[in-house]
Length: 137
Image (cartoon, rainbow, N blue to C red; front, top):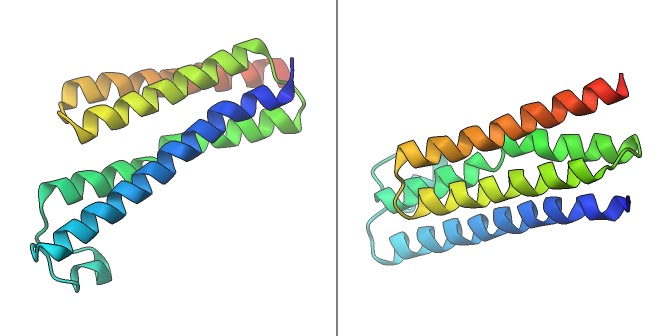
């Protein structure tokens, strides 16, 4: 298996995160330009803000929660030189779940659907980590 193939899902996750940073920034600019928030809001991110700003910020914050385990696992797999086809499949399924999670959150924000997609990503990571640890220990 070619080791660099495992990097494509990680790069895809970084692209998603950079997109969310950009969206968050543009949402903040929009809110400031339309005077729906005061600039002082950004000191501690406290105060009344439009819901679209809260959703945008929370969606970005989510990229530094569950995906941390994804990035770490990819790093460990590369360090152990143990990239398999199954790793690449798990990685892409996880990435797809994160993209879908973000799409749902930024559009309908329907919590039951969002929760199902979140659980899929979490289960993928748990199973993937379990298999990796079983094979390495």
